[in-house]
Length: 75
Image (cartoon, rainbow, N blue to C red; front, side, top):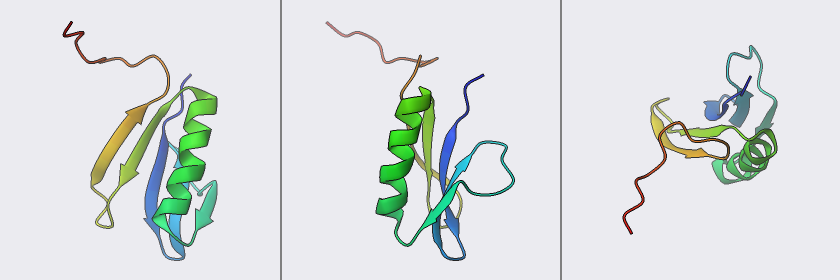
């Protein structure tokens, strides 16, 4: 089963969490640092990376596996 990786706001900075997990995998001071670690983890797990804004809304998402909705080939 593929586990999505989320970068979310945390009391001590920004957290990297596996979807459905109770606790963060790790916490970093800056969002940029958390995104870097989360992106590598998502690539290793061939999963989705979901980046959240400070208000918790989804800012962006990237797929590093079999994308269920790939972009159309416009060639």
